[in-house]
Every structure is written in structure tokens, then in C-alpha cells.
Image (tube, rainbow, N blue to C red):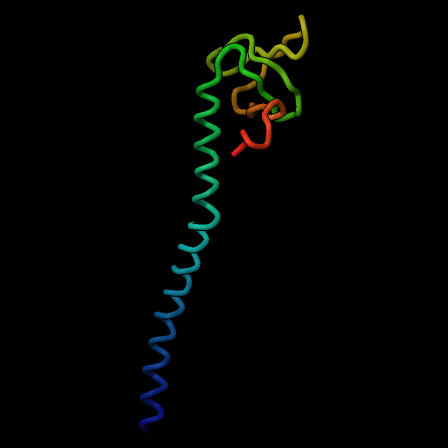
Length: 105
């Protein structure tokens, strides 16, 4: 009889510990995966807002250039003398080819 009561008590704790384990898993996943990605996206957004005429960039497609004009939703990028292209602001990243390893983060 005592054995049956112990099983019922253990079964009740098993449901709670399973729920606790799922919550713990979500917290760990958020801390190690979601939070760092949000930080990177915030840094890239700040970078894009700070771009001005003359900034060196690289596009998502791998095209290097210098911003010659800033518009509301896109940049006009000069990729070589006399060749300008329009590039969406969301597809622009910093050009780090000119920096030395000591300058990089």
C-alpha cells in the first residue's frame, strides 16, 4: 500500500519536473542563440543608420564600393569611376578589407 502512494507522489513530480525542464531548455536556448543574434542585428542596424557619403561598403552580393548618395530606402554606390548602382539599405555591410587585424573587433 505504501508503494502505491509513493508512485502517485513520484508521478505528480514528474509532470512538474518535465515542465521545468522545458522552460529551462527555452531559457538556455534564448541566452545562447536568440540573444546574440539580436545583438548582431542591432549592431548592423546602427551601422547602416550611420552610413554617409564616402563610406566604403560591401553588398550582400559581394560588390565592393563607395557610397556616393544616400536615399531613404537605398544607397547609390559607385563601384568604379562612372559606374553607379542602387543598392537596398538592408543588403549593405561594412567593408573591412582596408583594416588591419588589430583594428578589427
